[in-house]
Amino acid sequence: MHAAKLSKRHWLLIFTLTLLTFVLGTSEFVIVGILTDISSSLHITNAKAGTLVSAFAITFAIATPIVMSATSHFPKRKWMLFLIGSFIVLNALCVISTSYIMLLALRMMTAVVTGVLISLAMIVASETMPIAKRGLAISFVFGGFTLANVIGVPIGTVIAEWYNWNATFLFTTLLGGISFFASFFILPKMHSQIRSSMRDQFSLLTHPRILMAFFIPSLGFGATYAIYTYLVPILKGMEAPRSSISLILFGYGFISIFSNILAGKIASYNAIGRLRFVFFLQALVLISLYWTTNHFIFGLVNIGFMSLMAILLTTSTQLYLIDLAGIYQPKATGLAASLMPVASNVGIAFGSALGGFVYHQGNLMNVTWVGGLVAIFASLLTFLSHRLDQKQKTSITEKLIS
Image 1: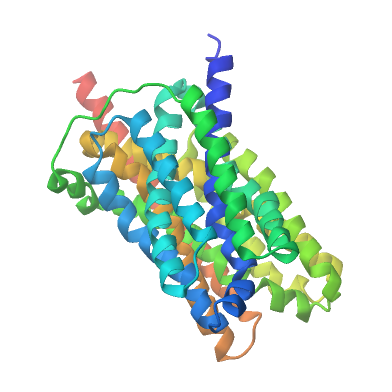
Image 2: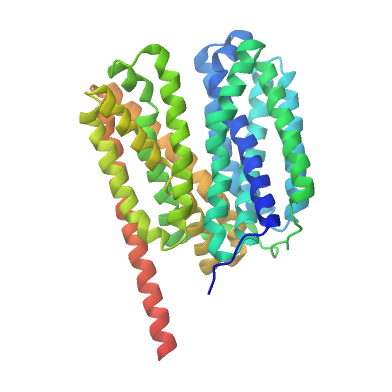
């Protein structure tokens, strides 16, 4: 029996959803590259400008599940087109923004739109593809964020250097327009989810198996970001030439493209079973940085492996959360689809804070041990989830036989 093939229409939809996540990712991440331009233009400190990043992440994490629950019954195609239109308007308003408060409010509203659109893109990719190809499709959609870091953010940063930070938001506005045009012609009409109460939706979050699945990617991202947040100081400690640091960071982002491809392969069969060992390998890679960074070349190779391991978990955990919701609360698959992006933001915040705490206690390279330990916790949690899955399958099989 041959595996289902993807049609031309399927590939067009995958491309359209990947374009959308590329646009959303560029808009979200580019703020880091233009932060100093914003602070000097608006006459605020860099620390105050930094709240544009943290406010975006916090709003994203809190608002996305709530809005997904409240709008789960909305027709997906029309709702997505409306949100992409809203994204264009909000970015256009950022172009003409003249105050910190106005820009902060616009970024927080953009965070809500971004979180919901990402979740909807994952649902569309999951529901419209042949079962055997869901992992491949979602890995491509996640790949939009990788491309945003590798291509979108550098372009946006260069535009700010050539012109000003307002021009960068003109760039994201134009990208939004291209995404709207593609989505208008390619997004399919999909059945609306049966309307259910917010209480029914959020009952999903009280289920222990869902909470376990949520913390797997949180710990996975936390492990990486405990170290990645301080990668520039680590590179300086390795005596990397100042002029080469941006090139190394570009290389890190480029390697993560292959991480994304591998994520789709892992998700194709026994994803959670495979992830148990992925996290264990990640722990070894992160801890080994403690020694390899004493040598420039070995350190760079190790950092390359760190990038390769960084997002192997994304596709598998995204599908796992949706599938678990299908078992425990079928009316809340929309909310489940929003949990992976939220978990990644929680993990990034947790990992950065943990790494910062360890860094300020003394030796910078101790963050490698902390990152490795967090990855081991992610592995243990995945082992436990996999074992419970196997028990459940055995129980169902025994019932069918009897």
